[in-house]
Image 1: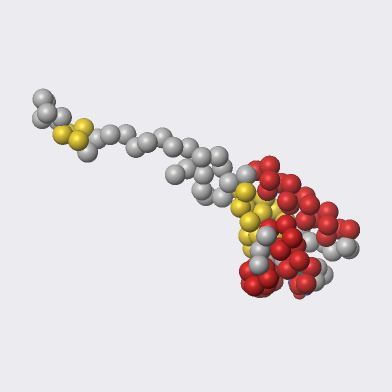
Image 2 (image 1 turned 30 degrees about the vertical axis):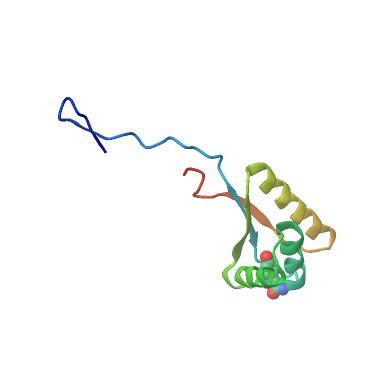
Length: 107
Ligand code: TYC
């Protein structure tokens, strides 16, 4: 808020219009057949998680049904989701993931 010297009118400056590109979460889904070991491997290989982080995220998905593996631009999120599903299929696992728009994007 700035005070206008001449007119006794308080002027509120508009907030800066800073817009960032939207971000997308790669969300892994639980199933009954994919091994815990494979999910941990996926989280480390494609989402650069440490062994401890990967273990914690895998357990969260196992107990809650879903969990975020990572957050990226739309193109990178789609690419990683496809790589994960393809790798799982090759290994005979039905692991699925979805790409979801996050709340963020504007700062
Ligand atoms: N529920 C699986 C099991 O008990 C493990 C699992 C965890 C599968 C996370 C998928 O995204 C997943 N073997």
